[in-house]
Image (cartoon, rainbow, N blue to C red):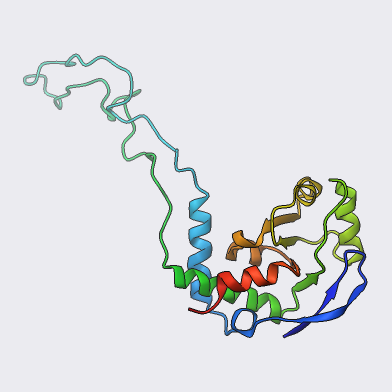
Length: 210
């Protein structure tokens, strides 16, 4: 697939780039995408939820009444879940929600996500750039020049650039990531995928077929 390279001014840079069909032109695998997104969202969960069970709730350990002869059920602790103020039964406990996936499946999921974006014309290639100052208006101006104002965008840069990151961090609908950290969830979550020209080589080296 061949795409035009644009400047941040919105004008064509006067050249095109060929996207690797083994990354941007495969038949997408929906199940691989589902599993990779599931892993990403699961890994975002802290898993620190907890309740006070019988062992954790405060209370006396004195036996409430004698074992036999009361005509009622035996009771050994005020902390029992059967009593008001007692522990919670089967409540949530701290746990790890993360799941593991094979490396090849994750690569397939990312290639599938990029292929979906390419098929739906959701990719814009930008000439490598940087901002002189970390100004939000500079980033907004770039989006406006590309007719992407108000849209959800993901900018992929070849390496960390402090000015670009600071210029975008206050924009709720815009994200900036380094090519090394590209992932299925954020690719699909963005309406338009902006890829700096220098990122293509890194993406290719990460997602190439084994």
